[in-house]
Image (cartoon, rainbow over all chains, first blue to last red; front, side, top):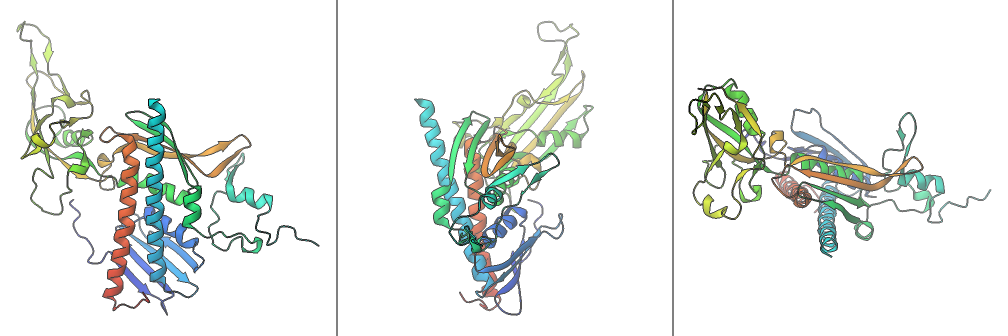
Length: 108
Length: 300
């Protein structure tokens, strides 16, 4: 594609005072992953605050702020990405099974 | 005073109602946002954190309707954040093939070159995008990136049987006039399913006698985020399950995915899931790299 000026780093970390808080800048990402991660992180008891923003609609980047009750924000985000992967994988499997069931029912 | 609901592991009926339903009022819906905080119901002894185990137990998907163009299915037990990610990915991040470069050799029609090129771009092309690669930067294009089409058409008066007739031939340029020019091993690879526009009767331009169009068009792989011509769906949407008592079930999504015909609709949802999984995996790796780049500051 034409817009070949990729940022050198797709993920930037702006650390807070200690490791328990950080702001992550995810380049080339938007509400799709932003809101999903916000949901997963909000439901993590280790997280005391999480929020995301897309500073400008024509700038392809997304900021994610995480504050935790102690553990490193990076570790918590890593965990959330893993959870999101598992959620998606399970949804995909469930969908494939539902599709098979539907096709089997139709053939009968 | 006794507080019957406190810490007994259940929520009071009205709170449970707010948690599981979106209520509809004459002015606007209310209680639209999910209660997300893990400790939101701590005082009632209810755990509101995310558990993969619970998700596995509760998620249900049921296909309601399926034909060549559309699939309708229920997804029960998922949050709007995740359902919306799927919807957004279907619209703008599942790849498709579309005409992207048009080399106009001759165009004496009323349709301007740029309008013609734009119209060509919007024609759904029946080619499985999973068998092609996206062209990165100035990478040299080959048969794994590009599908070539040729359009050569001239409008004349009079037909073969009766040259003197005033009838016009080729006054309507249709998508079926696009001729696929197989590159490299494409003829072999796509013998089973020849590459062509999904519909044969899309009107591209109109001609008068003497006018002609000669062009070559390159079809490439892309995503809807770049331009909606690369979107594999006509539309993808969901609605919440309505209830008779003026409410909606918060976690019951009725999904509807309408394909443009490039991929079967039932395959699109899986493709969207793959995109989201890839995204999560890539970001996890990039995050690791970023931490290493900072001198391994985290306690991993």
